[in-house]
Length: 362
Image (cartoon, rainbow, N blue to C red; front, side, top):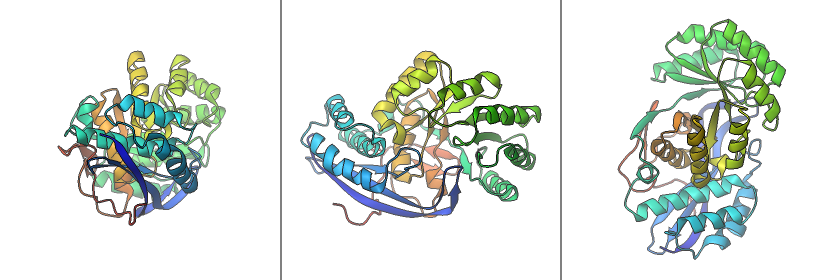
């Protein structure tokens, strides 16, 4: 199966509510979509969300990377020699993990379609269904309480609470949400790098003193402050999840080696796709470190690929794949079924998502 072409399109979808974190506010999903075409005319799809504040990738840089570097490097290669294709993809330029991820997942989609199997079965086939959390954007406390209660009414039993903009005031925000939803709902707290190491310890200890029963705190300190992350992890009882601090397998190995965090959040847009994500999974498995699978502001196209990875790998025990649930549009046909908190894998070959509303491919 030779790769004969790589094409790009643009996907624009409104969000049901503005998405707000310590880093940004977004009201509409504006992503680049990719399709890789095989010599028999079959196609694999991927998606690249420009997330400059985290990955450094913009629409322009994504398009340039795919059209000027990745496409010339791999068109003409034999897809069934997947290791060689992935080596070429990852070696054709440094960084630019988001466009690499989009092409990587399109390649995996096409590779699995060529074998007539759902991708998750070829990635380990750990389970056919799992549950995701849903994000509660950072807003005034009463608005966050309202959003949390609405999420619980929709069947979500795990909430990912965005904080990191108001320091110690975040403790009362989380306390109000816990009081509203009760003890049966899991709360994950995501500071998106919004605290210093000292603030993190003070805030997390305050939440522990109030018995708020927080499942984990995600990336409390800036991504490059690995020493600060390690300090926080060693000072608190609440598990710490490394997110922006882990892009590559090398990052994961370093975090694990010094126990800078308890868990690792894998996102395809940080790893450059499934190929490197699998390497992180193997590292985590060797050391008994549990992983979460997360996403940026992505549509069903790339979240479906991440869902296949989660369904395939048992070391991924937590999911934050709520991108489709945050969109105001109906789901696209094919692939995993997103039904509230439950994501169920289908028998569709590859990733499965088809008929992507992106307008003109070029």
